[in-house]
Image (cartoon, rainbow, N blue to C red; front, top):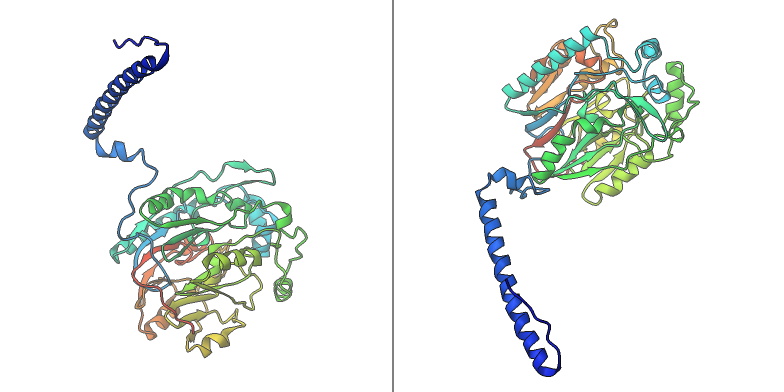
Amino acid sequence: MLRVRCLRGGSRGAEAAHLIGAMLGRAVTGWVQRAFQSTSSAAAAQPRHAVEDEHATEPVPQECPVSSYNEWDPLEEVIVGRAENAHVPPFTVEVKANTYEKYWPFYQKYGGQSFPSDHLKNAVAEIEEMCNILHHEGVTVRRPEPINWSLEYKTPDFSSTGMYAAMPRDILLVVGNEIIEAPMAWRARFFEYRAYRPLIKEYFRKGAKWTTAPKPTMANELYDQDYPIRTVEDRHKLAAQGKFVTTEHEPCFDAADFIRAGKDIFVQRSQVTNYMGIEWMRRHLAPDYKIHIISFKDPNPMHIDATFNIIGPGLVLSNPDRPCRQIDMFKKAGWTVVKPPTPLIPDDHPLWMSSKWLSMNVLMLDEKRVMVDANETTIQKMFENLGIKTIKVNIRHANSLGGGFHCWTTDVRRRGTLQSYFD
């Protein structure tokens, strides 16, 4: 044991104190070095993953796993949604404004409950087969986490049950190596991001950028509580006047209202995407990307990809029932505008959350391959005439939940570079 005696008096005391201090310092330093070496040796003997788990992030690799600039470059990795546990959203004003009157009794009866079990079972099977076919085509498929959407949650502004994680295109937008989490506009989708967080964190650790847009409170002020809709004519009139169920109280948007073509990204003001949300995106992505607002003769605008779907460089499907008011600017830029044929889906097939035009909601695997509904023979013929091979998959029951192939997916990585296609 090292004993230190207190010394007093003059310079001799100071010198003695200095000598003892130096001896004490060397003793402590030696002990620290030995302790550190012992700790280091023990750490080195531990399994590698046990040490890595202590770090918030992993070393950023040379190549980011997230990279996508448009809708048609060769697809390498994709997120496909889940129909499991899908629940009907409560019949709130924003849901009412986005659905057709003939389905309102369905929402009033089943809001907050599971979608019909037999229908849901068929949808799950269809999406599993879709994933198998994507694998066969050389695409890596990732899935969100299963979540219990029946749980009721409450914020200071509202209460709701959840909905699903079926449509990743609605909530995630990939721009280059950045994943943008959309804030959404339906209260039933407020916590939908939770199903995707494990995937997003994985991509972030491997080098991707991760941005979460400002989350709206979804207070009553975000919605026009007296939004006067009853007929299609009402909807046309309101849309023409620029009136929507969402107000400009705070930014909101769904990612599916944006569609990418390299440095140019096109967006519509819709029932779920307001101008504040568009402006947030414009400022966030500037100056590398330019946001163009376009509009359509659409009585119920919600998500752009069953109205205006860009399928190649300078090639776009434009819904003939919802003509684009700015179509001339695409034609002047040298784009080819293709009008898809009328969908073949039967009138009696339930489409609780969408229209028949999901037939044009296709997923490009590359410029020469497209995933298309196996029942839609007329649009298959259209693609074949364009020199594009059709990969046919049946997702009729999955359509009923509100989306086609484009909606059911978010492309994580496409092999390509940032270019300009709109001069």
